[in-house]
Image (cartoon, rainbow, N blue to C red; front, top):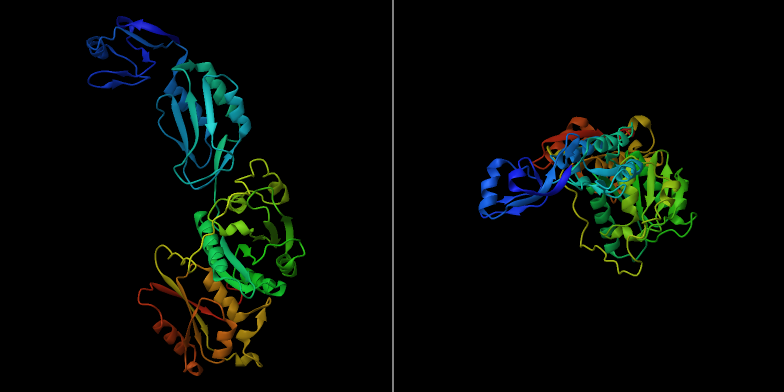
Length: 455
């Protein structure tokens, strides 16, 4: 590339180094001049022009930026037409940006004329967001340099990929003590629902229980029986030890404490556990706030399919001071928990038939008998609630009072069938008649089928 100031007569094919403002228009930087431009330049009194004349082995800035960007992007990324020596890479789906830093460093060290800038590793972005940019500094670079950049990025592991969020069906357990303000429950539900929905997951089941290890154990069993694949616990107090109330409840439910605490502020008091393959997170106190904290980092990486255990949490310290502990945090307060968003598409109701007496089993009503520590009727109701059904109705008959007591605290509507002894058809008729007129379809559940879960 030959760069300099040239007389107008020698500017055919010259790449403009700087934009030129003419009376009728602007000739932008990087434009390749032709003889058609000369009369306007001359009329404007511009007789010499600064720019670059390309040689045989030169690649102009736009072509070079596009060639380098094309080999950087992996799954979930795309590029657009380069402009002014810049080519951006974009996310085509919501998720985390995964960066092979070694490739980016290697390209940036090849020559000052080629630069690649990316978002920080594991940045959370939405579809269409810019995740990286390639900028060619001069108007052109040697083809050999372009090929060297492409060679650095040509391995089996792409420099940039998107890790899309994997939707989960979550449960939230809120523990309470006498005298706790309603706001504690409200903020826990609102903030958890917002976080999960922002990541493409669904808060299917919300449970309130006493701040007691046995109550936590029972709530966990219900969440697992309903088919939830992630459990969050907002305790009325945060644990101070692995043997504290809520961790003890997790242990009694067959869980394992994976890691307690994290080097992220706010968020230090997060506790990560697991029951089987289901992650359980005890939320730090800052999780009630709408502001970013350590819980967001854990959820984002977990839902993007990245491993999440003690090693990964302990590696979050560098950059982990999100904001100073001296900053005053603002609680997200509201009168009531935010309503569940109506599912897209058809409105499907769940209708649970729980009117039978269970006489063939003998003894008490079988619907009240526990399976895995959870009564059968409650398992069916939790499964329906944890799904994306728009409403849940329970038809009662025999043992109606006991069934309602069994389902206390759940957001279900009851329909009593006085003719339950005549058979299931009467219960089905009673339940269908109670549904809202805008329901498009109904899923009928039998309360004595405990292995049916939310999925």
